[in-house]
Length: 443
Image 1: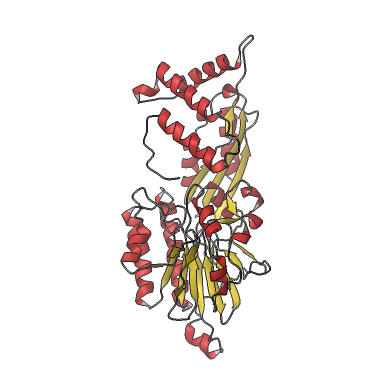
Image 2: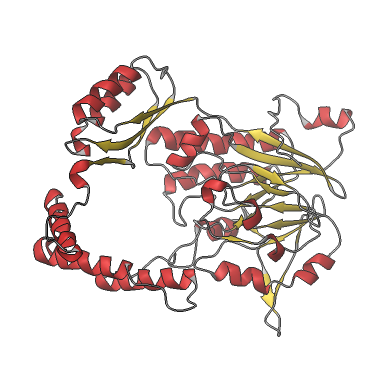
């Protein structure tokens, strides 16, 4: 089954569908809204608009329930203004008699253990479906939540951190899940190894065999690009993708044509129809510039010249600058002047990606007779002298020693047969000890 991209026409209500003989129940599958991901007011407004339009479409289409598969908010304790806007949509949905089911995403956890997701559930606005118990043999037996409107049976696993997720999937009592009869939905918030896109090859994922077979629909989250797959023995495996671009990668893909939205699934005994409803709340323009071999002043002039003919009116502009300057510092390019220039021409927002912009002044070159340790110390001193540091313990010789200790920690090799997740956890723990910090987040 390929991904269906269907822009559902507005103005078609439930009454008209009934007249056409469409009595099939349906649900909406939404993931990765990441409300509160952006600091810029214009982007905050647009991500909330995307969320609002999604729920309005769900109400217009008279879906029987909504399933949220993780990362409703960008953090477990989000800004209350953002929460208030989200609650308005959830409350309106509840008042219409449409239940909202949910699982945790990777961004939904907090150091205290209580997330905004739990608060929303206590308020009766959503219902978590990731409940289960351990059997005496150590296997995890999940319980089903039965939707009263349709009889659909929902269950699943929330995202976890640092390898716990893999252990939970491995411990699943898959046989009990597979023997359950009826229309079944399995919700999860993780990548599937067989379906990872090439640009996310390094992302941690689970094999498809860890999911129970025989479910009518597999509702995924975590991957930000929409996809719909089929595999023998499994129902449709669906990732609706991010509802609104969360970061530079998402923004670039969106401006280049990647569609954002959610799925509406019609079903009877099995899935009959899957529609992708596109949520488009802005137009964008993209410009990529190679600064290699240029001076900061040349970069400035050429960017201004190129951007003056770009259509930016009412658009989000994504400017990607990469390459190595032949001289000067990257900060010598007056990007603030470029930003003002773009906004004055009517752009909604300029998103600047210069993560791959470097300068020859910072290229590590050794002096005659200099060993690696000496070169490293010299470069660290030069780097520390170029930045303003307010913390006394991070300046001068103490700052240098601290940086050297952190580098030494990063070079620590894995122990024999040490799993990647355990190796990363050990590096992180040692880094916090070097910095004399308490680790308050569980990553």
